[in-house]
Length: 204
Image (cartoon, rainbow, N blue to C red; front, top):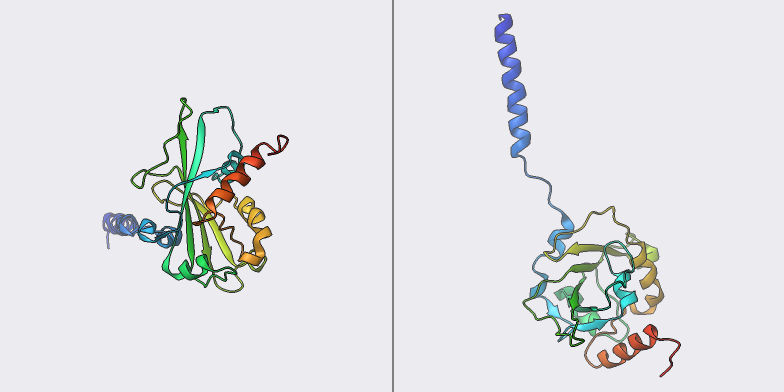
């Protein structure tokens, strides 16, 4: 085989490898699949619930607290998939493997002081997600996986720390690491508790 033929064959082979690499589909993010179509799941909160500012700060993709804009108020809605429905309603829940809980977070700005709660059609600013994984995944955290996603349900980088999520939920071990203070009949108490936490020196 001539030198020119060898060069041609080498270039052809290299080009084939590049072409194959370019058409190979990128691996799917399993986290995206876990929350795909979550708005068709059971809605735990019949309407959006007010979220205290300090809680809203913790529920960011990267925990931070910014109260420079006093007109921003945060609300949330919660969805649970079919596997977790029964446990969500139980007094002493034990969520089965495969349960997924999605919390939508909305930031609403109102200079007038009158805040309109987000409607079912509005897109959230952020999603925080809990997925019950198999035994041994994370025993100290009840085998829950935590992650965040943007308002379009695209998971954020897995490198973002979720330790603040874990540390917050550790105190709810007797409820399988879930708060569930937002369900029907509990919203009033939750709102009052949020107000007291915001103004602890004023009493009631």
